[in-house]
Image (cartoon, rainbow, N blue to C red; front, side):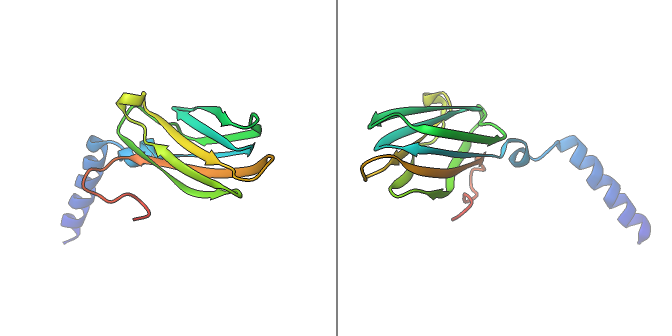
Length: 135
């Protein structure tokens, strides 16, 4: 019995080496963004770059970005796990080949003047057939 357990452990170890790392761990990541928004902006995330485009209102100030990982050119699903602000934050575009793997997040502040917003964007490789986290 002990020989069988040892053989299975060795086989499992070799299988893990041949299969390589699990892609979910290799490509999963997170972005925490914050800034003072006036009216409407779109935050674009491409790999490890962020661009804030003002749609209406004054330019965003006090922008802070903290990446853990980067969006890749693989099929990945992004989702917002947490946000704060007096208006709303909404993911409006998933990264895909047609938008050069760029995610887009809309921030809309309905009140006059700037207000501080924070959101956390997470991503993971798409595992077709498995539900996304949070479902």
